[in-house]
Image (cartoon, rainbow, N blue to C red; front, side, top):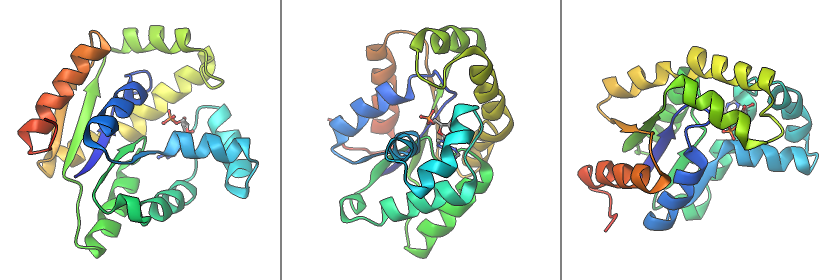
Length: 189
Ligand code: AMP
């Protein structure tokens, strides 16, 4: 099953993604993680991505798209995967759909974690990652609303969107996600 995990920064995507991929035994494809690794390793991609990430802006599409296209072509992705942090704009979603269509495939379900804005700001300021200082957090939320949030309408139109209440404990949120995945036929047990 090919799953996209959507939600604003601070919604707990990383935590939930780790649990989902463990339950379904599929690879976890996080573009944020791939990019942070590239920055750490000072690769060409990393050098290019660094200035965008540290100011809370999205990295240019072609950089991220290339990373994703290479990763989903690897053999461990044949049985499905969880995309976390990609797509992050309607443009990226279209590129992904085109790439999958060429292979006779499609995204099966999009899990959208919803959290109130006030709580997001609190959670992000408590997290302490390098790109979590106040100005950068604001920029990341702004970029989310401007570029990523329109994706929910895009996927809703395609009938694959499943909204999940992102308030409460990680266990509660995970149970809600499992219920949604079960309802679309994922082998969650
Ligand atoms: P994340 O770990 O998903 O919150 O991503 C951290 C940062 O990596 C983001 O603020 C962006 O600068 C960059 N990034 C991750 N995924 C993407 C993407 N799909 N498109 C553009 N930039 C991305």
